[in-house]
Image (cartoon, rainbow, N blue to C red; front, side, top):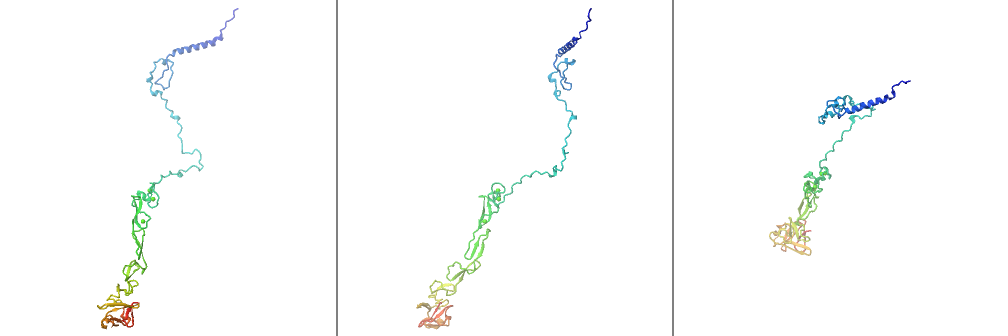
Length: 321
Ligand SMILES: [Ca+2]
Ligand SMILES: [Ca+2]
Ligand SMILES: [Ca+2]
């Protein structure tokens, strides 16, 4: 008996695998061209392993830049516009008010002009007051009371004034005030001031600043302790010899001589006469002529302040006190 031969189904998978390998090999054989790019396509490289794969290859320089450019973005995918105005969180009153924003600090102010009187370098050029040329000829104070119109001298860069000399005199005190004029203070009236050299004047301040010579009275001594030197009408005369002021001021001898000597300590001085009372009475009626000298009979015959001294057995004499 023959057993039925049944198809060997156990080998069918192997058969299928073999067909599949064969088809794959055929495909490898057909792909004998490099990958080609479809320049007119969407730009993405494609491997055409079908009928187009047999087209001649496109030269590399025929591929434009556009072919390599990525596709334009899809604007429909753009994110939504950001909203910066709407707070993301409630501010609960803590959000700063734009009106409270602090303004930017102002630029620093420029340095001030130079003040020429404060010893400070105000304009920051390292030169202060008169040392700063900005202060040239500007008023200043040199600290000297005897200068005035003080101004900054741009040469040395110092403050200089015009010198004023204020000299005092015996009867006027003068002092500087810082101005162009001296202050003047008169010395009290009748204060002594220097002798003017005339012995018959007394020099006194007049109370208005001047030293005024004042004539001394007649008969005032003008020669120290010398009795005979006396002031008469402002002149210092020798009453022992001056025929116009013989023995006293104003006693004129009328052209005759004036004679003088001493009787003890008493000066005896009178005009000469020659036996005529009239010669002596020309001086004053209270005269006589005795022993050839005019003889006074009373003080009235003498000068102011003088005394007619009676001298025994001798002509009398007018005597200064
Ligand atoms: Ca200054
Ligand atoms: Ca300065
Ligand atoms: Ca001054």
